Length: 440
Ligand SMILES: Cc1cc2nc3c(=O)[nH]c(=O)nc-3n(C[C@H](O)[C@H](O)[C@H](O)COP(=O)(O)O)c2cc1C
Image (cartoon, rainbow, N blue to C red; front, side, top):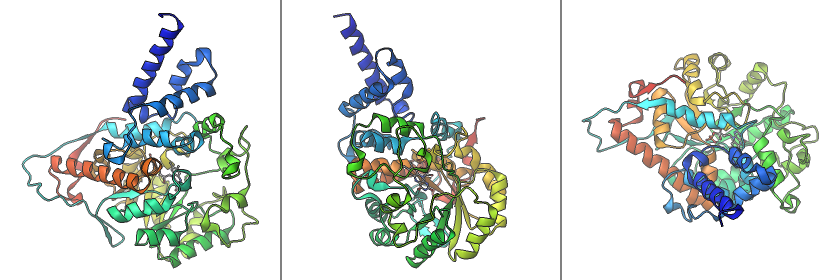
């Protein structure tokens, strides 16, 4: 029994151990190093499937939200719940997914300096953004096509946001309309904007959001078409289901021209994204037009009557330009490592963006936030609020609305704990004095 069978069993055991470890959960999609390690006797695809198979059989995956000990537990549950291509879409970064990992690891460079003997009986986590108060600084970032994760999609996220009182930012390419999401949220949501290459289409989305009561438009500027989402492409190849039974293989600007990935064209894609309803899309070829520049920001500024934020700024220079162009707020973001492989954590970019802004407008940061202590650190460095992308979708995929609520609750609880431990009774008391930044 010591021969091939014993060897295989040992490999399986090792794999299970890796899969169960948070390190693995927080890092790669299939853990490519693991699949490479198995590459001696199978193809990458079949190895990837074998890993997935084991993940799905893993007894460590939580079966209900209350079993979760941390937010990462929802990632494993989402992985189990979703078809490979959909989980690949959620997990993917670009190239080697190095920026996805960097975002997460960035937080480990920041240490907390807790103060003692402060009365922490009452903790107030609320923040104000553009005159509105939120009971938590944790913002729900725009995540597109959420019905790929759960049939209730953005509506379930909105209900969770309502239950826990969180600010929600709705993606342009959401599977539900802003009117339906606003009704489910019971309060206006912010609208993220991909303007497309046709000005009138982008303008119509802005005007529809304004009419729905949205107090802010969040213009995303960090995505060019053609991003190399290799983990997604691998997952698509590993997925044996017939996608066309639900949708033709999507319009994926980033996937265009990729072997094995066909495009259904923009109109077919738009049909599943109600923010495009009723618009003339005959000339739309890009969600994120390549000629976009600061003149475009000026034009947008002149069009948007509510607050205008830019999402995706990571440098001092662009932060200064944004303020000069009358932008009302910034989101420091690299699209959760899905835009380009910079290997630069957003938490590392935050201080220089804050320098560029010089206190004139609020700054939200997202990317790799998985713990209440991460939120604390970002606030200590000067962020006004902190965004989460994948964690909401993990909760959604695994358990629908209760899963999203549980993710929000867990992060709130962890933030409350570190605020009490550090002797900071409100968000404005979480200052730079409470952290030490080690060299990155
Ligand atoms: C599946 C997925 C879809 C996303 N879709 C959008 C989008 O449509 N618009 C946008 O501005 N950002 C989008 N993002 C980026 C998030 O808003 C956010 O910046 C990022 O996920 C934060 O990093 P995190 O996932 O590590 O928390 C998406 C992220 C994911 C994971």
